[in-house]
Image 1 (cartoon, one colour):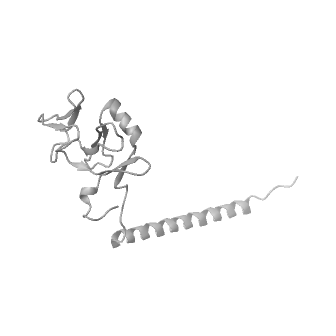
Image 2 (cartoon, helix red, strand yellow):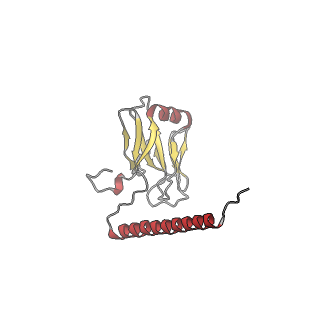
Image 3 (cartoon, helix red, strand yellow):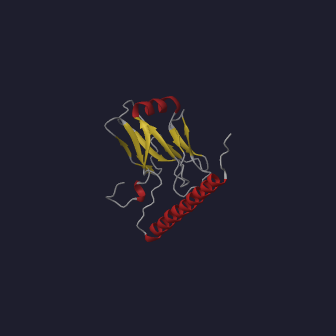
Amino acid sequence: MPVARRGANGARQLAILGFATVGGLAAMWLLFSRATDLASSGQVDVNLGSSVFQAGNIDRLSDDIDDTGPLFFPDLVGRDRDIYLQHVGDDPETGWSAFAVRPLDSARACFVKWEPDDRIFVDNCDQTTYPETGEGLPSYPVLIDAEGNLSVDINAAERPSGSSD
């Protein structure tokens, strides 16, 4: 019965593994050094998310608001931009507003709460009231496309005038 030689095969596999390891480390170093160079050059614009929040279809959203009241959307990137999306009226194509859940310079613990019986928002800290449209609170532009999809431009106030992302 023939016996396979193991020594040559094992050395060959070890050499391949060594070359793959060195090649992988070299590629990682190259990628890291290139990313560091780009980041320090100021030529990279880091954009970790869209500047426009895609809320969904106006028919579905208006039905949800009719059933449960204004929709609350927490800021997921920690910038303290929690918003309400509100719809007033019977026509899903009109009557939309998006606004902050707290007045400017309010503590994070202070926010407005929807009071469905009175159809107003009430600040939980100082009891200030706001109409159902959120007038008096920081607002965001609401856009509806041709397919009936609603988006909220959450960065409009931070963008130079005349610029759009």
